[in-house]
Length: 129
Image 1: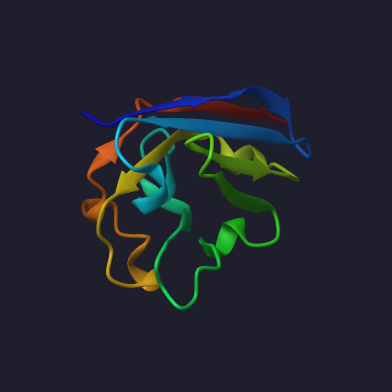
Image 2: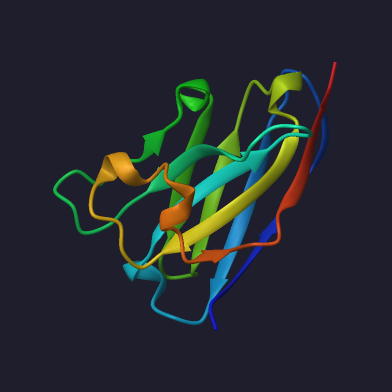
């Protein structure tokens, strides 16, 4: 059973930075597409960033709000994926989840939560004003 565990969340002031980490146990990490999602209170879960594999274009894929502020990266040797978040805003307050998928057919589909097979338990990120 593949398990994902997030870490690195917490409370930070607006304008600050956080780096979230996610370790993926079991399975062949390098063969998984990885995504970060978040869910704020009273809102639906939304896509943040994704890292795909085995496509011609393996550049990361970001939600518009994440472009220029967030960076997703992965270390296949350590089965780790990271989300570096800079210039954080109060609106970034949410529970952040990492997710893994064995099959996503196209980069543009990385933002589809339903395509992910495995999910972490989530970690709280709180940005204060």
